Amino acid sequence: MEKQEANSKLQERKMVGRLLLFPLPVQGHINPMLQLANILYSRGFNITIIHTFFNSPNISNYPHFTFEAISKESITGFPTIPGGAAKVIHLNKVCFEPFHDCVERLLSNSSADDRILCLITDALLYFTQDVAEVLKLPRIVLRTSSLAAFHVLYLHPTLLHKGYLSVQDSNSEAPVPEAEPLKVKDISQTYQIEGEDLGMMIAGMMTGTKAASAIVWNTFEELEQSVLPTIQQNFPIPSFTIGPFHKYFTASASSLLEQDKTAISWLDMQAPLSVLYVSFGSVALIDKSEFFEMAWALANSKQKFLWVVRPGVIRGSEWLESFPDGLQEAVSERGHIVKWAPQQEVLAHPATACFWSHCGWNSTLESICEGVPMICSPSFGDQPTNARYVEAVWKVGLVLENGIKREEIERAIRRVMIDQEGKEMRMRMSCLKKKVNLCLMEGGSSYKSLEGLVNFILSL
Ligand code: UDP
Image (tube, helix red, strand yellow):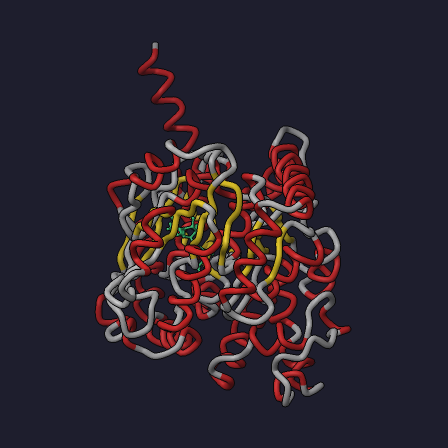
């Protein structure tokens, strides 16, 4: 009987069809794409992940998916290309042929009972829209940022035209009426790198997204209600806000680096709400001088802290060799340092009181889902927008306005972890956490949006 049931389930799954997913090969994009793959698998779709050899996902963690690696030659030299936008542009050029050939082969080998329904690809892999058109396969875009940060990128030509990108005072606190509540300095920071490359990358992403069949967002309606109508107006294709993706399943299996579990055993020994968690994600870099400022601020704060110092995060250092004498002792009294942490577990731990973050979108969402207030040190891209929303819209954290300076950091730690102001931020975070739980429940906004996405795919 059980065997019969399993067989008929398999038959049902086969009848639903197959989706081809292609993530951008960096941690903050791989995680949501594989989470989305798991969500859609749980709704009956067969999944094939197409991936580059560089930063390829850990296949053994996904025995239920099929994996297809596209040609090694296509990304030769990719990791050594200086600059994120230049890397993305390179990928969009060199992946066309191997990706096209791979999808064409999969299409010709597919059977009627396991039909390929569509491509789901990262918005930054905009070349896949051309492949989709050539092969007459619908393409759905996954955008891994917030709606607000995407909108700020959409405004790039306007902001450029109005002179915001060439302002003399890149520390200006003046408001930007076109992109409230951002300040001029947030815009400078967003676009600080790679002028022309960045413009090309954004234009490619916007054109590719406009031509797609639909967009999937790792966010939820209640969080970004004010931006959704603008996005829908600018991109008149279905938008599915089905996030936060990572809340659908507990395990995080797509980490490229090994997660140090001592982070959790160390947290287990700390008092409730006593620890500051510090991590700047998988891409952001800091200077040695900033690292010293961070270390002194943490030592002087007199708070317990769990600090992720990713190998290579300090420019010019392999790992911790640049710790000045004396400081390491001061730090080790109160803190625990790891190379990479199981971040979702850390944020969910009862000892964690505050997250000092670079405000990548995954980190921001993960903090919101666990109700942990934030201290924000954005560096580039979508991070300044996320940070400004944390402080000014959701009012659940503080932005370090003057970079990484020890007195300001110490003040911020006090404000969020000790003062009444911090308690209020925590209360507002708890409200957002409740909204997350509601939006995923039957009848909630993300639940309904996922139903809509599944029906949309089945109608293609
Ligand atoms: N992450 C992790 N361990 C760490 C630091 C980060 O597992 O020590 C994960 C984190 O949970 C998040 C992702 O890495 O899912 C980072 O994505 P985000 O968008 O925040 O930043 P990015 O790395 O893209 O700048």
